[in-house]
Image 1: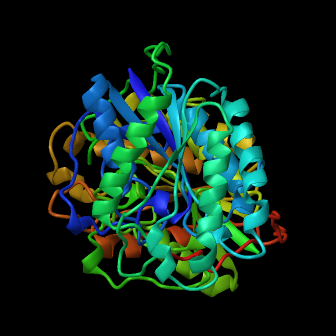
Image 2: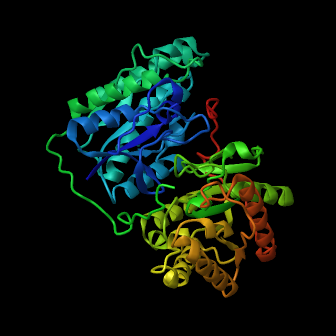
Image 3: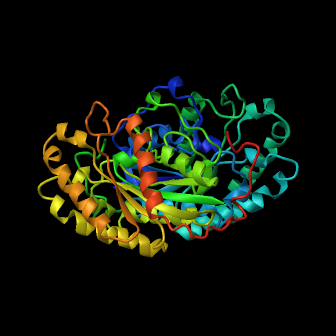
Length: 249
Length: 249
């Protein structure tokens, strides 16, 4: 039985932590979707760029597995640099994530959605409309995937952005305010603070150590929101069960 | 205008060439599909496993671009170790590849399909039924994606497999015979010989240098089959055109 999580957003959900800065997480109960099938999790979990690295979902998944004793599947669909308009309903990223989620649902049950995005909208022209756009997208994912009973977790942008370039350095706090306001006013939706988390030298991306910690915070918020009575069933397809000798090669 | 290619099969289409053994191919006109959108091509093109490396489509795409002067897009959907039953119509891998192709077709035109698979079917129990199963799958891809006018290129299994383990070492020639027979009897379908190509020390995967050469051979076969009158049109979606400053980060 696999409990799965959809990973969506921009580069800090993709994960840009330097792989040599933290110990890798190896656990046969942690899985990642590749070509519609589950593989044991490996880095980078979300290979959206040549710079993809440590991802916050790794420590999240390990905490979930340790707590519940089930297999955890990650559905990586984050794409670096993307703004909220690129996540519009019916767009390429939205439809890609929707289809990956549907493919994953043939062999797992989605237990939550992890979102981290907003740096690309931290501008004077864009921050104002952010919450309204986010609302439409999140409501659409809930409806299209029938995810009304699982937590959607929205991570905050890092404080270190104050040391990044304009206009992000003076506008990221507006995006955080929008994420908090949306989460506080939406059922089964939580905000995960990035307060105090460190950055890579670029002051744009969370460090590997910060992503490990951020994953634990996402899980703490998950526990506050989850429906403990949610039913998970065993799922399989005839082809998902086939394993060849060469499978891992 | 992007001319795109669907990459399907098992590990030797995924690509396991050691990245440090050949010079990388950097060209802004070579693209790879990530999350439904086009990125400049980078290695690994097909990140199906932690061992993914050099892929034969890299030199194929470069040859195509040099010849035609257009952007070339790669749609990586190969999955290591998979046998022909796992590619069954309506299965996870088939549906994943179909959907990635459809997503790519919103912003490109598919110019061909590159297939390399069969090691996992090189057994006494499986080789006999291989050609029949392959036929059903290829016909279905042509129909579902309306690809009747583009080449499907089927690569041969490497001679070095004679030095791999039983039963592959004595049965891979039966799969090659099936691939040749199917290609010779099917319109717009070509067989690409792997004769003389070298392996990694595992005697299972083509070396990086061999994959560079194999890509050129795929392209030679492509030129024999292509419909030179095929019309390619400019395609775009509103969200595919959005580029943010953070896009590459």
